[in-house]
Picture 1 (cartoon, rainbow, N blue to C red):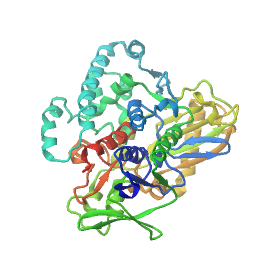
Picture 2: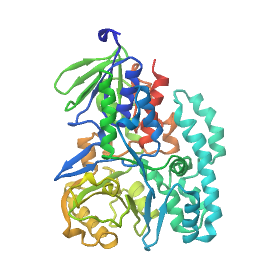
Picture 3: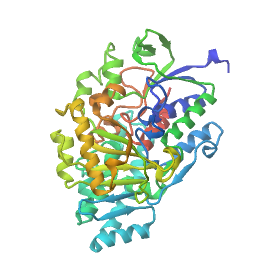
Picture 4: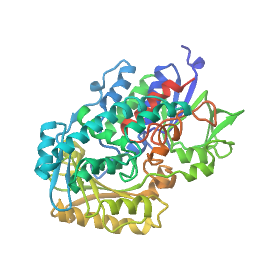
Length: 492
C-alpha cells in the first residue's frame, strides 16, 4: 500500500501498552508514529544506566509470556530470535518479619511442602484457595480481561458470575477465609500491590494472579526488561513505522468531536486518523483534552477517582555480590494491615515499610561490572495526596531502607554501595506525568474495573483510544498488553 494512502495513527507514550498498540496497528496496515517524551522508549519500563550498572526502572516480572509472543507472531517473527526469556525458580522468596521465609514456585508439591512447613493445618485451606484462584483466572483473565466493556450491558452480563465468585470480598478476606496463619494470609494476598491495588479493598477477582504465576511461570528477560522494550521497538520499526523520542505532546487536537491529531509543546502539529493514548489517564483527560468539552470523563470525575499508591524505588549497585539472595525477595515489615491502611487510606508515610528487592544479576551478571551486583528496592508509599515533601524526605527514607536491608539481608551493604539513585511519587508526577504521582493509575477497585474503568474507546472523543494501566483491564504487564489486544476489537 502507498504510504501516503495508509491511515495514520499517533500513539502517545511508549510503555508496553503503547508499543504493543503500535505493533498491532502496524499489522492492520496503519502508518504509526509513536511519541515519547523521554530520551528512549519504555515509559515506566525505562532503563537507567550509570556507573557501568543497568537498572530496570519499573516492571520486572514477566508472567504471561504468550502475550509478548503474539506480538512477534503478528510480525512474522519469533520472539526467541530477539529476546531470551528465562524461567525463574523460585519465583521469589518472601521473608517475614519474624525471620521465617517462603519460597514461591510453580511446583504444586513444593508449594504444599512450604505451606506445611509454616502451618501444617493450613494445607487443605491453601489448596482450596488455589482452586478459587483458578476459577477467578478462568473468568477474570480469560473472559473479562479479553473483552471490551464499551456498554453497560456488558457489565450486567458479567454481574451474576462476579456475584457467584464473591467479587465483593477483598483479596485479604479471601485469603483469611482459607488459611489461618498470618504469614500465609500475607503470602496469598499481597499480589495486588504488583498492580497498584490495596489487598484490603481490591476485589478478590485478583487472586487469579496466583494461578497465572503457576500456570505460566515467572520469567526474566536476559538483558533486563529493557531488552523487551528494544525488541518491541525493533518490531515497530521493522514495519516501517517510527518512534520519536524527546517530544512532549501538549494537546490532542479535536474537531467536531473527533480527534484529528496532536500538538507538541514546540507547536508542531501532527495530523492523524486516530490517536491512541498510552499516557496516564488522569493526565490525558485533564491536560491533553483540557480544551475539549467532555460529558463522561470531566475534570471533576477524573479528580474523584481513587488512585493507586505511589512507589519509592532505590536503585543501587554494589562492589561485591550477594549470592545468597534470590532474584526476587519480598521483605515484609512488622505490620501488614496497618501499613496498608497508612498507605491507601490515611495517606501518611510510615516509619516501617515492606520492600520488594530485585537482584537481576542473580540471573544475568552482565547487568553490572564484573564481581558486582545490581539491585532495586521498591517500597509502596502514599501518592502525592499525602503531606510528604519528597525533596526533603527522599534521602532519609533511602537511608532507612539501606539500614533495614543491611540488618536483615545484606551485611556490609553501607560499605559496598558504589552507585545509587532514587525515584519517588514526585518524580512520577514530573517525569512520567502520572496523576498525583500514582504509579499504576486508578486503583483496581471493583467500582473502578471493567465498565467502570476508563474505556479502551473514548466515550467523549471519536477516534481516541486508550491503552495502558489506566484503562481496561488494568495495570501490570499482562493487563497493559491485553489492553492493546482489546484495541483490535474496538477500533473502527
